[in-house]
Length: 482
Image 1 (cartoon, rainbow, N blue to C red):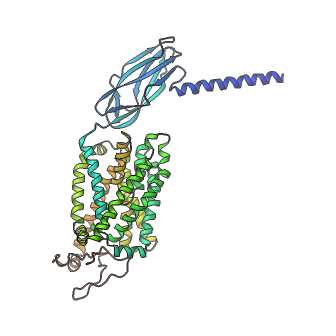
Image 2 (cartoon, one colour):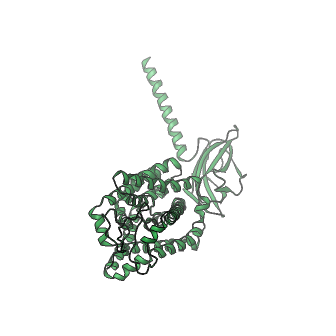
């Protein structure tokens, strides 16, 4: 009796294992038990506004029925003939190839579903799916813009190196509290913050990687520009940008490994190109040292960088927007609301945490605002360049949508803040500002005086001569005479 029960149990176990093996085998073929399917290609690509053929192979059919196709997102791509169907019968001439045409509408990565309706049932089964990538049609303007962007980034790094006052920077390094707080916020707080935002805002892996990539980028020229426009500590800003650009050689790949890997999964096309990334960062660091060397060797180059930083920055913004908006127009028209929300709140939260940590650790208001700018305003253009150069399409364009919208939103937020500050400064402290900044600017073109909380940060005597600032941490954007 016990032997019989044991044999029965073994037979039942064997049957279950056999059924599980059959189900697994069918699943690996991309189907349920009614039909076995294999795909000619792992991925099907189509350009926006164009069509292409999709082919699959029917290996075997165990039940008569009708095979049809359905786009998981007709907004992004659709079937040219959505009503086409294929009658499949048991014992047919298999394997058999089946081809249908699909039309690309909007850049995306979506699924084409395979549906099978058995003759003996009215239920429609999803027996497989095929990934469809819709790409942008290649345009010369987009290629030109990427290389203009690369030149833009290189020139900004040369300008940064050329405008660095090594003596003033050395004073910051001797008391590195502001620098250390800024680097902590930039490479510890921001990556973790953007990782949380990516998880909460969207479930698309391309957008999630794009958000995290923004958070792992070092500071850039834009934060330096806003530090000048807002009259905060330019020396600290450029020092933080310099050190963050160097530290990014190790921290950016490390943070991407920690925070981007959970979103890539097994998709090798979304994997971070670590070797290419490090090489690109090294190449972009060299212009900084080139600028420093030219500034040290030729004093006029340093003065040139100091005098033209504002007009060149404005020119770069105009040229960048003139080329970038048409080249990346797709990012503004196709980005879901989630991308825009992430682009809006990321710099705001970053600036908030930067300001909060700086105040917690006892930094003065001007230093705290500088750290806030350096934390919230990431070098998303660097991320945009890396994505365009090293990721495949259409993944690159989908990831880059976050960087593109982030740059635009940051420009708007920073410009609004600068206008509000300038208006407040003009209305509320016009008399003081007229006294601090004489109308005869040609005689004082090497003096830049900063206003903090209406009261000037630099002391003045009755005879109009300036006194030295009180403390390295409160030192503003100063241009020293050679």
